[in-house]
Length: 282
Length: 258
Image (cartoon, rainbow over all chains, first blue to last red; front, side):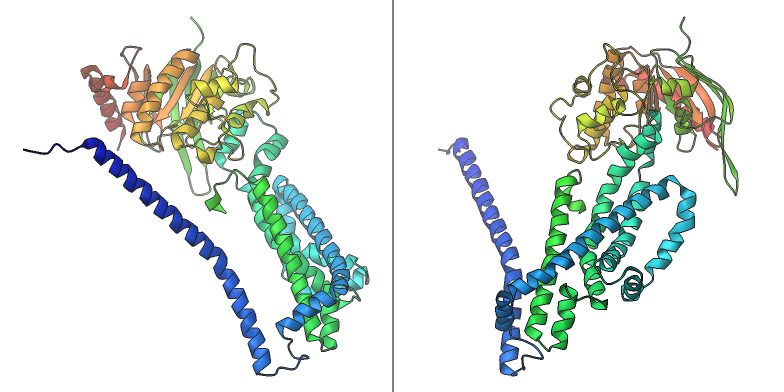
């Protein structure tokens, strides 16, 4: 007698094996995601631990380097002073960011429409960009005085160049067939600009803005080094001269935390605006 | 008898560069009847895309006369009598399928459809994309992107549809399916179609007239009327009549090469 294989039984067992494979796969994915989030935390915590151990074991005096506990205490204890000084730096960085990028976008638009202007002035822009920030800063302080203006100008200048270059590239790197399409549709120059070139440039613009978000803060701080009584840059100089290492570290942490938040804000706006690209192109 | 949809008389196109002058087209003459489906068949470099661009007023002829729907190419373009489908779909990636089809209503001084013309949604349904209106181009396959491009070209009911190797980048199976659908769309819209391809099968299957071009310089090697039933499906490609016509086309192409 031969046994007739029960096909329905085979089907159910195959479904079961597929389901258990899916479950195992999902569990593995979850494990990997968790690991991906935990490992950076482990890295930071162990580095801080190493720092604390080194300061303790080597008996490093507080005017050379503080212990992490002391920095944390200073952050809390002098929070008011830190925030009072962050405010001008933030205003300078954000104003410079807006001003520099706006100017870059406008000039890129002019360049794309008037090729002769681009040919005349792009080399000038490149030349100005080769001057280091620390060299531009004193010139601007002499020109604009001791207030916020020179810091805003430095932050703006530092943002300007990458955005100009990227914006020109974004406006010009339009698919030739898309341009032909606009011509077949008898689109005017301004329609082609607003419907085709400008949206095409938006991803390019955002990659420049993300760079500009962190460099604008650097520009404001460098400006404050040259001549200022308030701001993150001034606080860095003061605490260095006072051998107040804990305050110096706390100031640096506040400054870079602001930088990171600025960058993340731009990244968030980018995600909301640029929704048309597949994620893997970022 | 109507005026021809496209009437091309002795058209030459030369591209000047510092090193040399390239003659892309030399003394090309042909005409397309209204409502006809004409394939421009030829090897790469024979100027078939250039010829299509002269019809669309994207390139000005160096010599000769081109008349499109009884007008100059420029007038026909400004009149929105032309639809153009490019080799890569040329969709705007920041617009959904529906918004891409609507683009012609936002530029060139057109804000509304002529009375009785199909709406963007109806055109997407016509090309088989009902339900995909809100998808972005990167979410669509290559074949679907070309369908969107065809729907966009059909907006406003153009009397002449110009297609520049629209299925050249697609796999053969998708291309076959779109070929069949294009025949159906042609029948439903009644537009005149000028279709550039380098595939003998595609040229013969689609058209009722094939213009064979030869390269260096681009010129007309032969004009053939395709004597196949108007109702066709892909199986027709295995019939003796089709095979004979295709063999004749290949012979024309062979003569043209050096």
